[in-house]
Image (cartoon, rainbow, N blue to C red):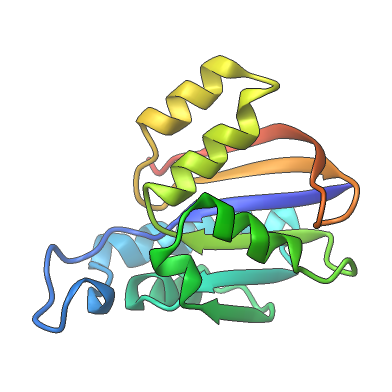
Length: 158
């Protein structure tokens, strides 16, 4: 059994003179990422795929997870198909994978994966996926297939 966790970055500043990709976390965002990190540790995260945007890198750092991470540009500006492709390339030795990215991609992929098993939850995920939220799924098979994906947990910040 594998576990896939999709997380939206934490709360950020509204703008940055260097552009969207350079936006930093706010103090609230850092705190929310730390709180999420405690729960993520209990889920057994072994590896992370993280967008190269400043806010996603800072979110990952604030979680306090001591796991290998790959920082990928494609997770910043590409959509769900690219994200699924990157997930499918994960080494099969990894049983629990965390992906930290952006909306609308994170919410759309979470809803897509949840749809077969829980249409109501899928609709809620698509409509409300705040910063620092994450969704955990259990899946059978290898990362290339993600067979029999089941929604396990939705975590939204307090």
